[in-house]
Length: 264
Image (cartoon, rainbow, N blue to C red; front, side):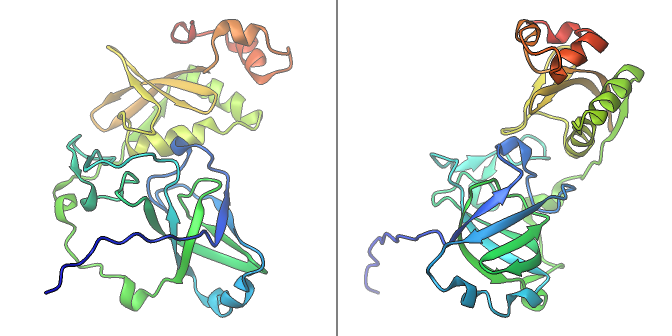
């Protein structure tokens, strides 16, 4: 056989994602992992992509091929989420740390308008470059009886999440302010309450802390249960005191005080 020479290929984005997820820790690890969120894909102008989208609107789900543009390097072994803290070969995982930073996801297609595709049940960050779109075909793309390698030896655990009286009051108050931290706590900690890259979790001697955007909760894990103790601002107390009195962090501090874990 003739020796195969190494080749380099150049691809251009056909469009970009517009998503509510702007940070890695905000997005689910896989589509449909308990995170319902809508987004849209806006294809580039002047390429006849409107014509290329013809006949796609009859498909319930589509494949998206895209670029992991937030990663600057790859790793031969990675630590997948929700398993026994054992590193696995990157080709046996869906990790974004790949030799060629290309991702693939199945998402639900809601509708198409012009060059814009409206989707949900996705795991894509805002600004993600799309390389290609293909229809999902259940008769050829789904093999439910296929072996799942090392995943077959894992025991899936759904952690129950409970709240102290203080945490319940604090989270309900935040919900009234339009901050749905309670929903994020339940989704993320019921899935996996332990530290992992992109997951803002710290472990201390007697408790753990999870942060999401500007808020933090303290909790402990007991077998298959996660108990939330307190909720507090992720800002240092001195910074909070300099904010406007109508700022939600100021109002939270005035109403609930500052928990000892929040003092900095």
